[in-house]
Image (cartoon, rainbow, N blue to C red; front, side, top):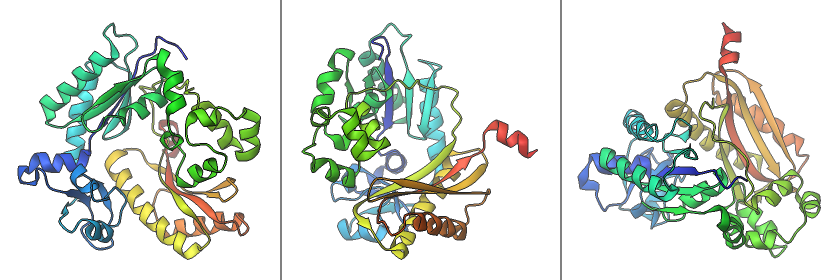
Length: 345
């Protein structure tokens, strides 16, 4: 990990909801959610006033209303969100050409070529975003992408944190494993059985031990717990896939119940494809991880997100488990690259 790398992760604060409040000042200080208004709809996001009641993205609207009867729901307005996202990205481009968007509301920036400190650059970028869009953003500055993303969540909302190269070891030792990408509630429970709560705890286990116990996931954990991440910020990245996942607090043994969850995730993916992606869909994908941390992926070519096709994929993946309960469900699409689209002509 080079000490010269200066990676910034910028994450807009409650982006969709913040835009709704900005455009309607009467909502200021009130709990606001964005998403389907019907009882069967789900929240796309919720502002911090609503989150204080336990509301969050992907939550069914009826549940959000139970937790917060005063929540004000606004329909999704992708045109407004795209416009604000383009404004923010234009600000990024004043500082670097190496920008890797992750979605409309977050991106990595490689600022390694800049002479200014990462702290100063992050503060300047966030100030420019607020002055030009009246929206707030949080940021993480670090020697690599993984730590920058963790750091951007540290002082939300409207804050930032820098983790210097010399601070990585101490930062990671004290970091809770729940902050690591891919460690959901079930993963935390499995690690807790080993006495692991922090990355420092996890560092006590050898790579071989973690691989024997958790397979490839264990190898990933070994590297992540030490803050190792050599991925480059890819400014010309073409999105190859888009998916939504859910890690269950208790393993699921009921295919019918799992199918209902899959349908909700499918709606989220469909909205995300509509709002974020200009590429054609290449194939539809279902991913399952089972109780023993093994997994499988079922995939079917096609450009339409047909619910019945996903039902078939889920059944196929489920049968591969041979009776094992499910700890994680993923629903998504693979996207056609420029080369793929040329092949279709």
